[in-house]
Image (cartoon, rainbow, N blue to C red; front, side):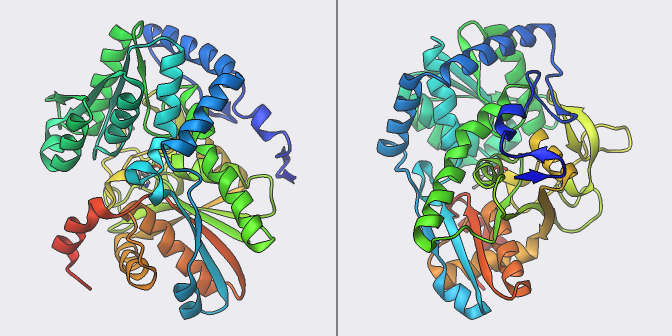
Amino acid sequence: MKFNNIDFDTYFKSYPDKNGYFGKYGGAYISEDLRLAMKEITAAYYTICKSSKFIAELRKIRREFQGRPTPISYLERLSTSIGNVQLYVKREDLNHTGAHKLNHCMGEALLAKYMGKKKVIAETGAGQHGVALATAAAYFGLECDIYMGSVDIRKQAPNVARMKILGANVIEVTEGLQTLKEAVDAAFLAYSREYKDAIYCIGSVLGPHPFPMMVRDFQSVVGIEARAQFLEMTGELPDAIVACVGGGSNAMGFFSGFLNDPVTIYGVEPLGRGRNMGDHAASLNYGEEGIMHGFNSLMLKDENGDPAPVYSVASGLDYPSSGPEHAFLHDIGRVTYDVINDDETIDAFYTLSRMEGIIPAIESAHAVAYGIKLAHEMEHGSVLINLSGRGDKDMDYVIERYGIR
Ligand SMILES: *Cc1c(COP(=O)(O)O)cnc(C)c1O
């Protein structure tokens, strides 16, 4: 299928190019030390990802450890209450550890093992990526260093406990604002010192090449499964698909299964409290081109051109940029990026819980809210929503801040 002069029949052979670019976005803007490390990972990944041994081992892990394939559920009560549009969800909440993040962490840790590394290194904000990576490290018997700001360590006690139970070292970062940005800097610094024995594992389709490509490839299992399952269930493709976009990994994996199909694709960004700078994290809707954390993409900038402060009720979505491939798909118009605010999200959180018996992560509730909106606007057809994770981690917070509705 051709779209805006881009040939989607051969898309995955052409994007990214050999330097990691999706159009003008992507690349690797890093120090000389890290350049060597990235070269090593890129060469290893291009070789190993074609090896039948690696592919077979990853498939076995998906099936026997992660519990894949995750199902698609038809939302019968919700669809009927809205009208004639049929809503479905892809159940990444049922993936082991309760979200999609384990899909790329298992791939990254398996790559580490094939490269003969002893340790995995990462940063974490809310702790979701740290927990997924600690899980993967325990499975493979790798050491695991997770860098986390002091403020986040205090706020996210249950995830800190999970990481420690799984055997990870949680390393406190006391610089600056003591949150995600400083943790990223500390993790990169540690990696540039330890790259001979360690591999850095990024938490989304972000960072320097090859990470946006690698994480997309590891997450593509979501889209491949969903497309086959939906065809099997209904005999057709969905008319529209929807996913929430923070860094963009669950969306990119899900979308990649449908890019070459006549399916309308929506990415949903968090509008938080509103359109003013500092009140949202909708970088694809309101950002400009810029470089941060080693890659070129659309980002929200402050008056000095630095990454702007961002906000969302969903801590997994509050990042001032998104993956370069999303910026590219945005510019060519293949994916429509739109927004959902905090209030609409909390409504959808309760609606899905009450009408279907599925408590979604607040991140995923953004996609659910958008799917419901679409269902009200469309006259007929089907919408498939990626339910990126379960909401157990968010229940106390929702009750405390919004009460039982
Ligand atoms: C981390 C997280 C996200 C956001 O990350 P992406 O890379 O944009 O997918 C979304 N949903 C859940 C449940 C998460 O844990």
